[in-house]
Amino acid sequence: MLKKQIEENYPFISVITYGGKEYVGIVVNQDQHITTILDYTKLKTLEEKKYLLSLGETWWMESNRMIPITIFLRQDVEPVMYCMKNMNSKDVQITFGPTVNLHNLSTKRVKRKNVQLLRKPKI
Image 1: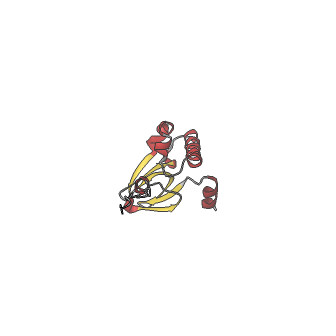
Image 2 (image 1 turned 180 degrees about the horizontal axis):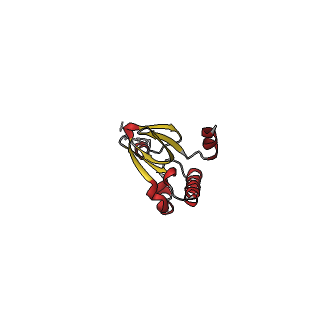
Image 3 (image 1 turned 90 degrees about the horizontal axis):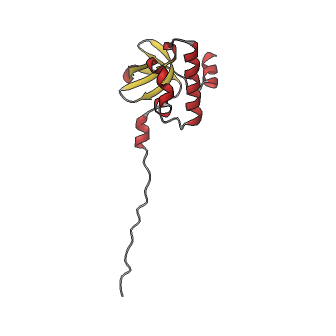
């Protein structure tokens, strides 16, 4: 029930399990070695929690969701950067929610057409 409400109201929130603990927040980047998350539960005040949720909503609605929130909203995220947590990706299990991987941006390739011009032989 709670999972469904989170997915409907806050589609940018992810829940991950690491070291037997659950972490709720916005996944900044996940590659084969490190998973980075803005941990919602580490925020100190209610205002900061509301602020992170508003940043997440802005990022979710206005970006292509492939760029990490810390790059898309660089200066806006600064006040809550203290809640960022890095984890070993081998031990991370994504329970639900989206993840961002910067590596996927670099592997997309543009298809190029190769056009070769030939001379007409003289007869």
